[in-house]
Image (cartoon, rainbow, N blue to C red; front, top):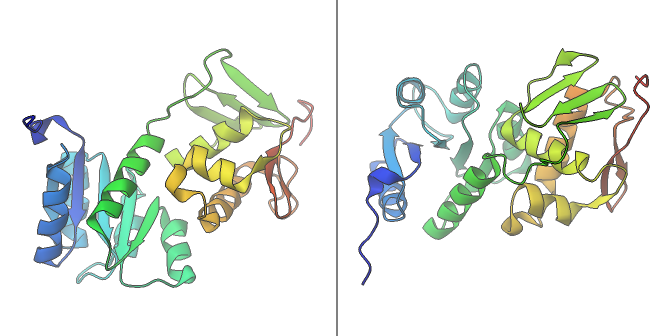
Length: 242
């Protein structure tokens, strides 16, 4: 049998939950797959850990004392773009959307299969590493939007726009297929991973985020347009189009 790789070699994951048994379960499943793990039992401890440990990903429970997961996510997003996977006993779509609106990258409902959690962790880490970006051209332009691929720099009308890693990956996918309608399933698989092909609400939320940040009038988008029931397309516009 092959000896396991030392856990100190892998990405660092912060697990935040006030249930010690669940923390031990998650920690054990991550460490056996070469992830390093630090823990916190409430939101205040989590903020300190994010600042001091600089984790590669945070697994964060919603229902916690002192500071719940929503507030913790909001506070983390004030200074960090670390990927966040939220854990909760709630399964309503409005709860998921609240997490996404605050900056969460993924959402898993308790009780969950540890293997599913590990799969989500892998997928989130993979898509936040900016893989498969175009190298043949340094920039992309359409209307007021410019993307500098080498610097991961996005501007609208020469003003810098801050995007989360997931927002950036979605924009890159649309930009490298400009003027082509990408199917919902195609976008979900390319940006989130094959296990997300049916999670259309993820796509709706992040298209809305991009429109709010990139469009002059998000209610009447000119850059990111939809083909109802089919998918989305990033249009090529003249440089002087606003």
